[in-house]
Image 1: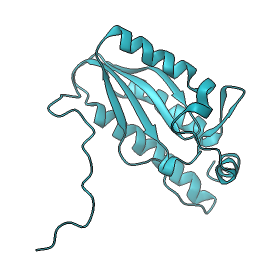
Image 2: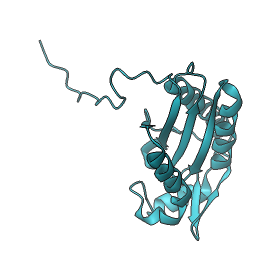
Image 3: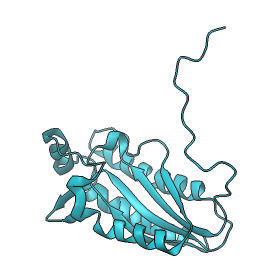
Image 4: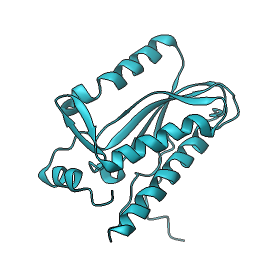
Length: 174
């Protein structure tokens, strides 16, 4: 019998943790292959392109989609998105909310891409989350979100190749 030739994916969610319970969650979702699909940083400020604007509209729709849950804070960067998801209801699983968000934004992205004869993938598989367990961590994460555009060149997701800059400004999908 031959062993699986593919590497085993690392489980990134907390084992035995109920992601539907009330609480605060810090979420990061990256663009496919970390391409700069959403705009660019100019003078420490995010300037979203049409795809970035669409992503933020869909993110805002999360506030009314799941009762008792809302986005407390967020920042869109050229190739990723951070937000704090607040679950006051204890009924909506974080994964279900992210799945809905990624599905709706991808659907809109693909419709626009098809209209101009382009194709592509919007999001990287999965997402990163951090369960916020205390006020000092909550404040540190909120500060990180506020300052993220100012520190773009220091960000671990930073990409500034010529090809990426061209893809950001051209963005044929919207």
